[in-house]
Length: 154
Image (cartoon, rainbow, N blue to C red):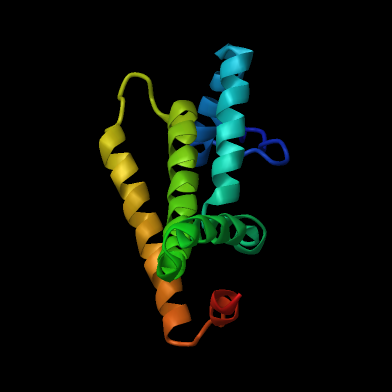
């Protein structure tokens, strides 16, 4: 009895779920239109950068976006700066999750068995909201320190 050859380096084991996903990615890249592929990959990259899955994005991307939203809202009503900051942070995470989900669904979804887009987007919204509430609670209870009091004085 001859054993099947081992997978090439970087490829998943035969028969696993990862194999099926790998086959879908390869089929998408082989059969898809190059502009569609580029759009999906760009949306996936931007979504990943905005999402809570990227460990360094808060300091570099999400907090500056949130601060900008807070400043914009603060120009209208200064006491709303903190609320605008939280809303901007939440929105940047939601946009990231939604972009990742929609682009990943285009690649990984089985064309014969389409999923429920509304359910997927609601799960992304819920996930982002729970993450934002957790971060807000950590800041509120002093586990994480933010320069918010210093920023409100300026």
